[in-house]
Image 1 (cartoon, one colour):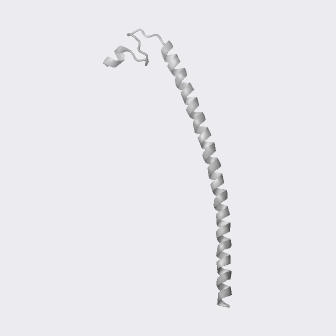
Image 2: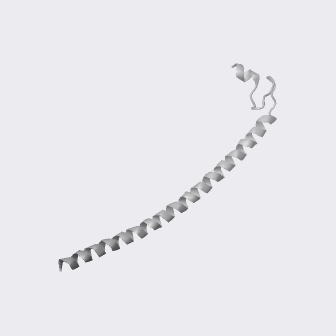
Length: 82
């Protein structure tokens, strides 16, 4: 009889472990989907940031520079001396 009780307890523990394993698999799948989504969002933000930087650089290059010779990075010689 004690052997039967022990087997039943083991079977119950195995069932609980299987349920927990399935829960963890679902949680892991949800987290993986969230990581994918956030990665895509990050990549989109990086792309938009790069485009915005390019637009700002273009606008800076179009600004008149009355104080000195312009450089490629948009700074003037006057700014460096300060």
